[in-house]
Image (cartoon, rainbow, N blue to C red; front, side, top):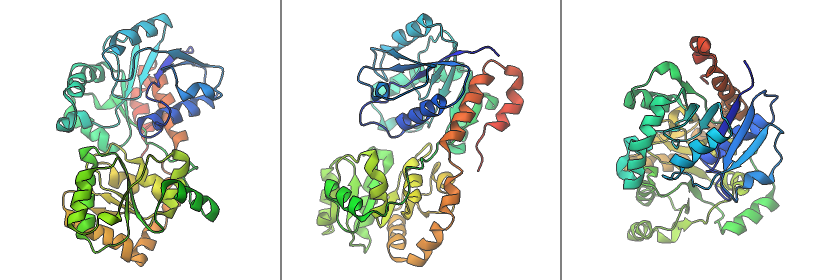
Length: 382
């Protein structure tokens, strides 16, 4: 197979945005850059991207795009750039892709939030998804997704050939490990004005993240350890806590820089992730890797990601969430049993494996006769 010109959209990587899809794309680029790969890679970025300040292999070329990620303008500009650079394969690592892509295309669909939970999105995003994304998914040569839960969602909601869908799990970096340096822990605690003992939730305030339910459950519980929410201040949550005389125990943290997350995970008594819908859900896995006990919703991909190493709760029942919080805080023997085998469990989620599997899908785009064999080979199935 001759070398290909492969374009990867990395416009979602901006200063201070290295979680979620941006993290996935960054790890993909770093992994490819460290490989001896015959293909040439063209990385689509916006001005101001932090990517250009790093060292990359000689096979990387950065293409500057004037259109922002998720915009109507990209529908015209991206096809033009792909033609200009004579790209053979375009990888959209998110639900954003040009409808008139002039080459073969691979898409990564992390979840179907926009389709399954349209009420939580703006009319613009609903229009974009229905006008462009559905059609792009249909015409993609292959679809990557990050969990078997998401694969089932794609198969259930979209009419696709199952042989074109490949599961490539996200990974957890070795950077996420328990921090024991007291001086560093105290330094990070001071930066974010964290209490000595606390329960932690790192999440946005989108409805499906279920933070309202978490605060209601926390207020209902008999726990008096502060709850730290790494999300924007929400007056309605404070009013709820005030009604239970727990307003003084609710802390809203400013945005947590990634380099400080391992220390904060290591400090917390309990990490909580009550989201009702996740394509993968990386924060609980990162927190577990740092030695934090974890409470997660028994929903979507989360049981698949955490295995037998978390306390589960019904995310729609605040009393059950309260029960899970109390178990996490007070039942030290059960929590200790959950943490056994976490290091072995995390090895199942490797960015290096994700990169290998993704490159295999790239190659498959030009070797259709290999599809039946490859479909089993690239699925990560711990």
